[in-house]
Image (cartoon, rainbow, N blue to C red):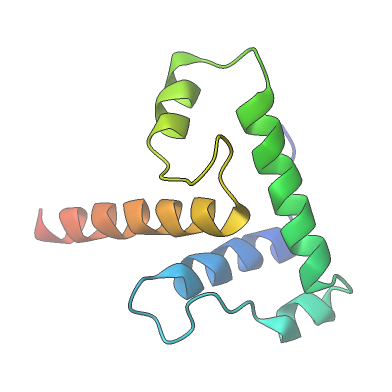
Length: 102
């Protein structure tokens, strides 16, 4: 499969941190990191939304994909990039807490 770039890895980590419900950075994208790689915030959001739209509208989904998609809270049939990131970040935090408790 495709190897994730350093930019993509860093951006995902930034989104996770900045999506935490109690984070003072909630909803903020690190513009310095985005500019460092020559990509605008608008382009990142547009690309994320395109990927989410594709995932939710494709017809050949596995049962696991369907289950995960159904678990994402959203206001319409397809979540916004913000709704998606917030939900995934929340799930990751729950898993981290669960793992820490053993």
